[in-house]
Image (cartoon, rainbow over all chains, first blue to last red; front, side):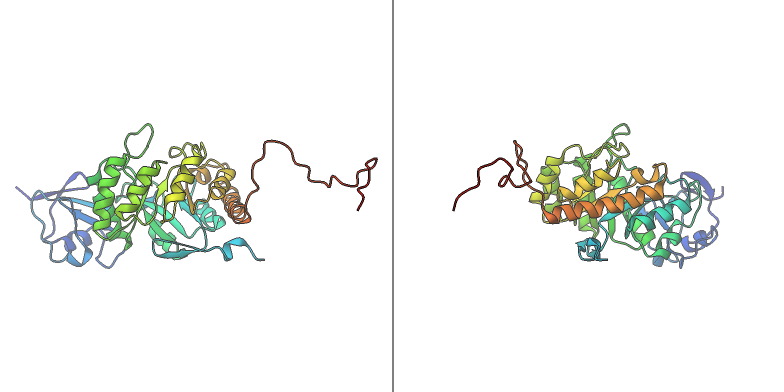
Length: 69
Length: 267
């Protein structure tokens, strides 16, 4: 069975070897500000995206700033 | 013109600011009205939330728009009901926005949106330990405010009234008590319904006011933002000017000597 991750609460095929590739595939290169990602409940700083390998079943949360009070 | 704002700067969270207003960015009719209202208010600090990407309805690039103008961003943990969620949200906000500032909110229930102060204290302690500059949204409770300061929060932000209620400053005496015992800035967060509420907050001696709905949901947000700015200045001037004592009976303001028909004083 193909590996999957949970991205923002939805199942998603794991199509990248590391977090940097995964994020780039969604339009977020590591130089872009205003976005953050948590893997299994821990924030991964953008400097560690490249060295963070993704595994089957990982839970990822990608967030950005939105209008708020 | 020698407006009070130019000589009345203040320090909060390591920043030296001219405006004493923090504005929320939610619930505006459009991005343009948001940006125009922020400009009209004179604010230098605006709050944002962090949410999963792709789920925001409406225009994107909020981060770009706000930072282009040079606003300081104050991310919040709005919508968090536990200390754990609030801490992770704060950490995500720090990574996304490259700021140590966090408006810490831990909400107790949906109906009141009042703070869960137990979880607030737990999460404030953890975030201060992780190097955050924590600005907690709290009850108008002088005891809790003191505890938050003792933990190391860089300001305390008691509510004037529940979030979005527009009920104004419901317990002015508690806010005065909080201020009288605090050595960090006291910022009234939530409850403002209209300009005079802002004036009252500053007359009471508050260091700042954070508001959102009062401007965003006003019939004319930009006009209301102008009113809020003027109200803040009025309140600060009144505080610095010093109000007269309240008296039970009247006291004539015109001279009482020299009235026609009176007997002139000798000597």
